[in-house]
Image 1 (cartoon, rainbow over the protein chains, first blue to last red):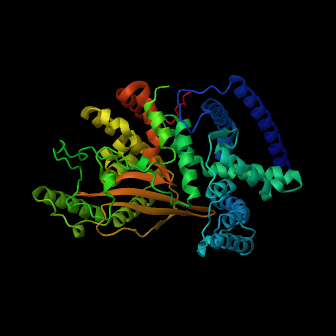
Image 2 (spheres, rainbow over the protein chains, first blue to last red):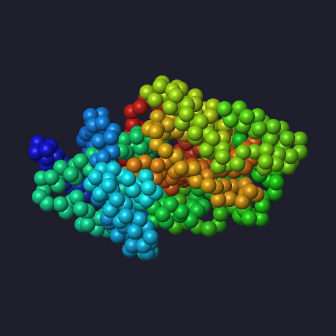
Image 3 (cartoon, rainbow over the protein chains, first blue to last red):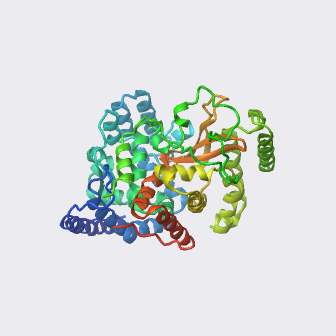
Length: 305
Length: 216
């Protein structure tokens, strides 16, 4: 435990120095905007430097350490570690649900904490999920969003990764109330912080590999995924439908030979029921309702920089 | 198992539709949520029974996707949605090539997701739609210990050949919306042909697991 704590502390120091150096570099390079020209991301130059730093850090430390962790530590123990930290998180997930005016969800979260801390042996077993108390995902950034705060510009922070102005404010509060980073004395705290980070990174190993395979430009892919994800979380998984993802309707049927000359592009036989939204069927167009980032998308797709 | 029957049904429905619009009734087709459930459970069964797939046999995974999953996807619609407003500028030939390349890209990504499957449990949500609806979203949640469930949503459209998926959202992240910005930038810089070329070179590195460097 002690040696692990020392190693962890050394890592934290090396890390802090790396962060400083990169920050200075990025600032020296200036916040030059690159050719993205996306209205949601005016600091793309800075963000890309941070992204590059995070990526390098992850390649050098994050990925190897978490891969070793995943290989060396048996599944059940890793699940205990994940559950232990997840359980501590439930306290402020509940608080945020309360702040968002969802007392029933807050009670659910605190009941989870009560069950898991006792019957779940200090949280290492997620017994609450088994009896139907589902885990939620809440933080102060989401609470601010729920209160109506707009996300502001996209930001990438060293080590913390993708964020926005709103979510940055949220993360400051998350850290402030985080039982792990408040824990004293500092030796076990450092160990706990590194262990939690390792555990979380290990859980994301598959996802990050998929990101690498899927993206043409991982920075943009990550940014757009992050913004969509946060939007979804603020609406607790039921965001208003984003017209961006509404289906284009100009094309002929897929894999079915030449296009029919029919003006209608419907592939099925019955006329659309009155309940289905007719304006969405307009040929080669989106639903008129504008999403908050629609101007940005338009700008990104039509303006030359 | 039900796939053979399903294919026959789809074929029958298509044939019927060719003869007469309106011949394929709702009863002839599997409901969208039932289809998703069948296909998902079937794939899980296959993965569980196949040691090669579990140890990461890429070829087998891709074959599994090609035969069991892709027949239920409308890649033309998916590609059009991902390309967005630029789709109208593409010639039919460009559209066909874009669709082909995008299809390959999605298969690769899907293969990685399947390889990452670790006995998670699924929660198939009841479909909230009227029987007459022709556009539905089917929701499946992946349950895991110590984390909130991960939601997967399939946007599906009813066609004469059964329900077809045209967008997938994982944890509210839409496949087509996420590619849209990337595609728009490439098209702006190097046109539709540039996008085809970019996708092709991306797919060309399929065997190479090394990350593709980001721009800038």
